[in-house]
Amino acid sequence: MYDLIILGGGPAGLTATVYAIRKRLNVLLITRDLGGKTNYRLQLPFVEKHLVITGEEVVSRFANEVEYLEFARVLDKAVGVEKTKKGFAVSTKEGKSFEAKALIVATGALGQRLEVPGEKEYMMRGLCYSAVSYAPLFIERDTCVIGDTALALRATAELSRIARKVTLVAPTHGELDSPMGRRVLASPNVEVLEGFRVEAVKGDEYARRLVIHREDERRELVADSFFVELDLVPQSDLVANLVARDDKGRILVDARNRTSTQGIFAAGDVTDVISEQVLISVGEGAKAALAAYEYLLQLPE
Image 1 (cartoon, helix red, strand yellow):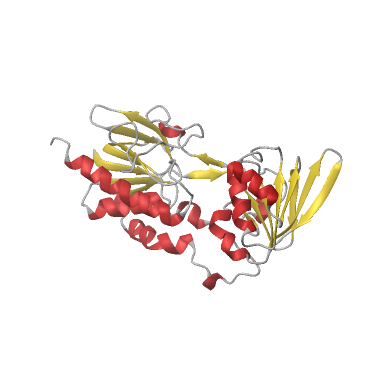
Image 2: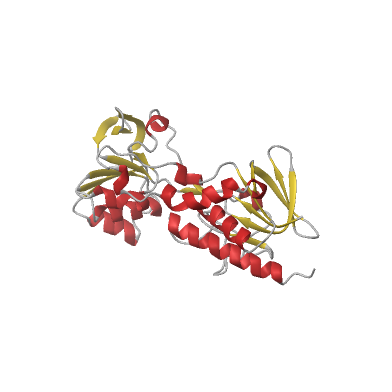
């Protein structure tokens, strides 16, 4: 029986693990890899690596510490969580089972994919899934955003303050009638192509062109980078029957990262906390670990 099991080895999960270890908790991190989405870095022909502080660099110290402490981690995928009399039981893909008094869910969120030719080839090579993270790199550049949800509109609005031009490829009218949508439509350097869908991504070493179509009309868009902002999919199904979630599947947490179930905490992109940023996830992971520690201190021996 562990004191604490942490699910997910991204920025939130790694930070929570290190904090738990320093509090001398008997902790186990269950994750497929160390680093999560920070293992994928956007590469651009006009940006030198040494000029950019990457998420990978921010969490590398945490990852190195956890990698060294083999007793505190299991490189496996959690596939089930059950409530027990003494806490929680976690089952893994490899058929193992682990029990703990408390649980931190830090399984993150994945960006929806286009599922078109060229996407895998150019993923993170000019084709990106987080304008919020990389917008500052596009001063006086031409950019393209794909999507019609609030996430896409936010990305377009942010890029419009930095880039020379932003082309929004909106498959449907989506949320264009919202305050953010009206702002996007009124921006002089934003072109909205409503009703178009992506057919393919083309390029050389990097993504250079986007093939889009609407009924019988087909176009090729040229830009310095393309941002897929179709929405995020929180990886929360594992605890769907145990904690409260919002309509997008994000785990609802309070200011102390507590969920609706006593003993379960959550941190990072899997929660309803604002913005998908590495530094925010790091802070949320630390908070979750400290809250779990306080919870464990109050349990009877």
